[in-house]
Structure formats: structure tokens, C-alpha cells
Length: 345
Image (cartoon, rainbow, N blue to C red; front, side, top):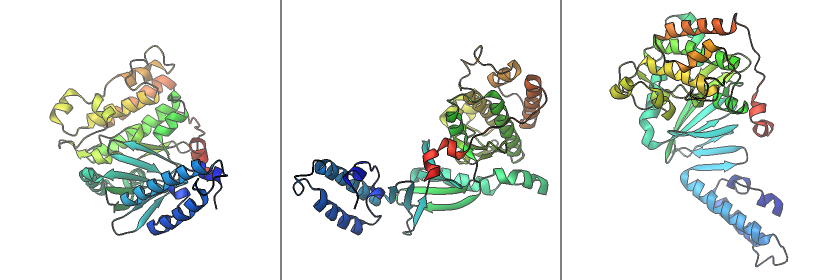
């Protein structure tokens, strides 16, 4: 039996009740006998505890009706076949289409059924990725999402993709640095994105979702995985389905008018990521305040002007002008630094 203090500290139904409506009702009856203030007039905490019990009970019933369940360190979703899919996220956040749950070895996207076309587009685009030869496949297959499962719940679709341990959401790494990443780290992150941008170009794909919310980096390996954003991907010249608000803002007037996929959007998005990592997505406040080398700053403030391969080559020249010969700059960050409570549970 939980103590009064323990119950008052609970925030999720799964901390107090089992994930079964019949069992919940029986547990609620027992808890009511123990904590109802009319039956425990001598206990000064009885009223507060009973109020918390009622709140968690009602929230639990609502969650069960919606096909989900939450407890300390986990969340479950009930598929339409009755199977429960259990996640243990280190962190979660919302994006334009739904919610993202970042786990140790996977990322789950939970999206409302009104956005089914975006889910289909993600799956179909990734399935259609091609490689010129075995060498290209070896180099780029790891950065392409690997689908672990697709599920349908009462109100949502869930897409779970593999995430190798050690890869961290770029958005959370940026937060760890207080919203401004050291420029040398920003530089290698952009290099990984330009490399992926060239691969997307080989496939004729306008990703349209390159953004810190959708990119995962390995601090120890200095590489990255573009796990998110594929919901918006289209072949060059085809009509776009949508894009994150930040990406839409930096699209050219021509792209906004034609609403067609183009590599220019991805190239401009990579520069946007660089500005966001530097503390100012608009770039208005970077001039005169940033300590990064002027060639690198000028690059971030400029606009994409060429094919992805040309952009990557020009970026390499910019790095040489700004920093000299390449050198490995350690980034000593791990999941335990970003999510200490989640990684110790």
C-alpha cells in the first residue's frame, strides 16, 4: 500500500493503477476505503490524498478510452488488434504532425489519423531509397531510417524507427549548450548534413524537413542520422506535402509559389540549422556578435547558390579559410548528460 506522501507525489495513472479497467475499479474501491475523508477523519492528509486518487483514476479511465497508458518512465499505446506497444522514452516532444518519443534504441512518431498521408509518404520514400553501388550503400544505409514497426491505434498511427544507442536529438544537444553550440561543433554537424544532402540529391529527393527537431548526432563519432522529417519528402519537381514552419520561412518565393520539391530548400535548410545552432535562426543578431571566423559567419548568413555537391565543396573551402586544416574537436556529451533521470531509472 502506498503512503500518503507517495500518492501525493504521483503524476501519472500508471504509478497507482494497473492498465486494466476492471482492475482499476477494484483498486479505486480499495483506495477509497483507505483514504476517503469521511472514513478517515483523523488523518489530516486523507482529503488531499483522496483528491489525487480521484484525479489519477479519472485520468486513467480517459487514457484507457484513448488507447494509451502512462506510468513512471514508460508510455503504452494499444493497437487496434489489442496489443499494447510499450515505450520507455528518455524524452518526448511535439512537432507539427504529432508527438515524438525518443528512446534508447528507437524513435517513435505518434501522429493523428488525419495525417495518414504523411505517414505513408515517410514509409514509401524511405523504401524507395537507392544506392549507386555497394560502397555507397555501406556509407549511407546507416543514415537512412530503418523501420521497426508501424501500428494503428484508435485515434493515431505510430511509426517506430531504429536509433542506434548514442545518437542524440540535435535539438536537445543545442539546449544542453544553452541555445548556442560552439562553432566548431556546429561546423562538423553541418558537414554531416551536407554529406547527406548530396545523397538525397543522388536520389532526386527534396527532403523538406532538415531541422534540429529531426536530426540525431553522435558526439563521439561526429556523424548524424536524419531520422525525422521524411513525412515531407518529395521527388524534385513534384508537389510538396508540407514542411516545418521554420523551413517554410526560408524557402524561396519561387518554391513557395510553385510548391515543388527542389534541392535549394534542403541547402537553405542546412544553413538555417547552422544559424539555429549558433543561437539565431534568422541571423539578424549574429552579425557583429558571433566570435566564429568571418568566412563561416558569412556562409551562414548567405543563401544556397548551387547544386548540393557544389555547396558541399564550397562549404569545405569555407571551413579551410575559417579554421585551417581539419581537426577532430571532442564533444563530450552523452544521453546521461541530457536525460540524467531517464538514464538512471
